[in-house]
Image: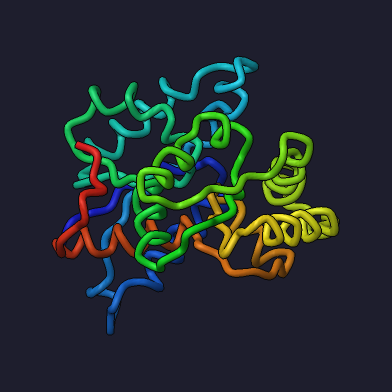
Length: 236
C-alpha cells in the first residue's frame, strides 16, 4: 500500500477535512487496513490568490520545501489540499521525483462521469482567473458558470472572512442568493473548487447539488494508494 503525502496548510481546516475524507473513503475494518499518510501542514505558504494577482509573494518556494519534506519522509505520491495551488505545479514538479494527483482533474472527471452538461464553479478569484477548471471542463464538453465579476467577492469573502477566520456566525445570505442565480443560469450542480468551500457547506449548512473537490481527491487518492487503476489524473 502506498503512502500518501499531503501538502497542507492551505488552509489548516481544509487539510484536516481532506484527511478525514480519505479515512472515510477507505474500506477498512481495523486500524491496520487504513492508508498511511504524511502531512506537512505548512501554514507559512504565501496566499496563492494574492500571488496570482501580483499582490504577494509566490507560494512556489514553500511548496517545494513541503514537497521535498514529504518525498524524503517516504511519501509515494502527493496530493494538495488547495485548488488554487495547482497553478504553481509547473514550478514544483521538476524538483521532485514522485507524482502529484491533481484535484482539478479528478473533480472534472467526476462531473463528466455524473453526466452534467453545465456546472457552477465556486472557487477563489485566483482559481477563476487561471482558467484551470474552465479549460478542463470545456475539453469535456461541459459548460462552466462562474459568478459574475461583481459577485465573485462573495465566494472569496466566504472563504477568507468565513472559513479561514473560523467565523461560525458568518452571514451567508448573499451566497445563498448567488447559488440560486447560478442555478437559474443553468448550473445543474456546483463544483466546490476551493477546499475551504466544502468546509463552508458543512459549517453554514449551505444547500445544493455539490461536486466536492476534496472528496473527489480523497477517493482518487485511496484508489491510487491501494494500487488500483487511475484514469490518467496523475501528473508525473
